[in-house]
Image (cartoon, rainbow, N blue to C red; front, side):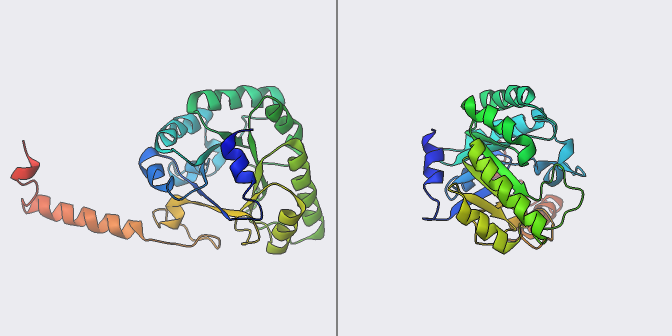
Length: 257
């Protein structure tokens, strides 16, 4: 097994796993100093392209952004989301996952779902493709974006699927918008790390989209904490630039050839 993946698994019950989603080299060079995992998420569909859902994201788009991210990573584990309709069966999943790994040099891929894709995950793992799972709210297939685990049948289903994914061979799994006590139960009942997003600090680690936590993406959802207001900083910088261009203070001699 990949050394980086082993080191992630060994963090289970020992130290929290720090993860972020990002989509370009310049940003990831900064993240790499602080993160254990960098995910090139299909969330780029809404964050960067203003798509209505992640379903519109293509494999080629994921690959191009991932190639950029790869250039900025030296130590973090790099995971790439397999977009919607690229792993409908084992043959398709294997072909596309191989393409992603070959072209992006990523360390692993992430697939959304439980029982329906367990056989597909087994195929990928058998072919030496490391897989991260994703349970709870599944953006690629969700009809409503509500947290999961309120009802007993839902709790039982998600816990069962978490164990199923572990058996299938995933090295970790994202739990998205999973009720806190359920996230705790899942984390205690499986031997691989859980990465939470809106799933409490009961998980083994956390993940957010960088653009959300720095205030670049003007999103207001419960699970995002804003650690900065980059939109404000950019606005201030551009305002100062515009003023200096208009008043002929920029460019000066030192900025000219």
